[in-house]
Length: 266
Ligand SMILES: [Zn+2]
Image (cartoon, rainbow, N blue to C red; front, side, top):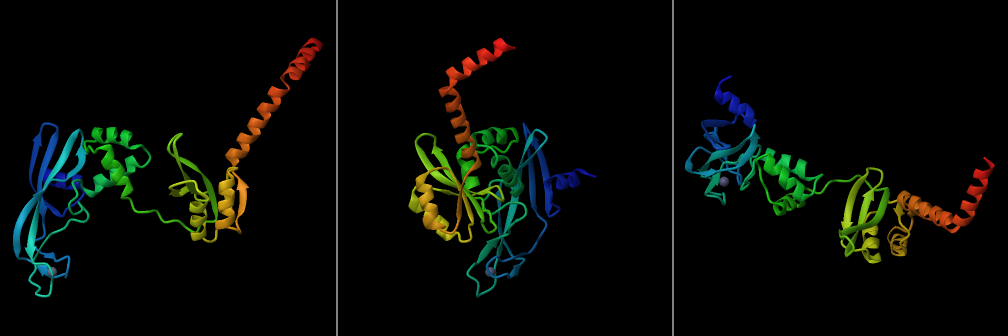
């Protein structure tokens, strides 16, 4: 395997010419262009071989060992000669490599999402720097907000509880599919109206698990009147634990006296 073949293997595509490989301090720069001499107009599909111009993009790719990898991607712009088309020129696209206007390759974005999803943005930011594709915590939050909404099967058993936007200050309502163990929605507030409207929009819910909040009880009665309301396990155990503690505290004098008497008998 020669150097070009190795680079192609590391880039994960054989659709690019690798013209040059430059190694700088901590960085590898790859000068690349597509192997295609023709491209279909994205508006009308006309296949053109008349090049108008070229421009350069610099997307960051996955690091090689401890070197950041930056592509010097030469992009061809073609004429569209279809008289009925709204475009006069168009640029070739690289959907498997890098999205239009993106500053990172598709596989970097995918890796960033995989890392950022289970972490907070601050922790992900530190890890990104280690992997040589740095991104601010603000951009990481934007990256996660732009993720497509997950699709859920029909909801049957739902859990409702508070969630803290800012602990001790601002709270909303979290809804969880208890069969799939997935969060399905976050509501802006804890009001009866918001929750009842949400439940009314999701027909077929049979069971709603909740804490002892009267607001949630009323919202469920209004929004999903046929659903069975049950106390959630966490609150049941907490209430049981609190009650047992109170019982032992209230009877502590009697319990100590009984323990002393028993110890004397032993
Ligand atoms: Zn066209």
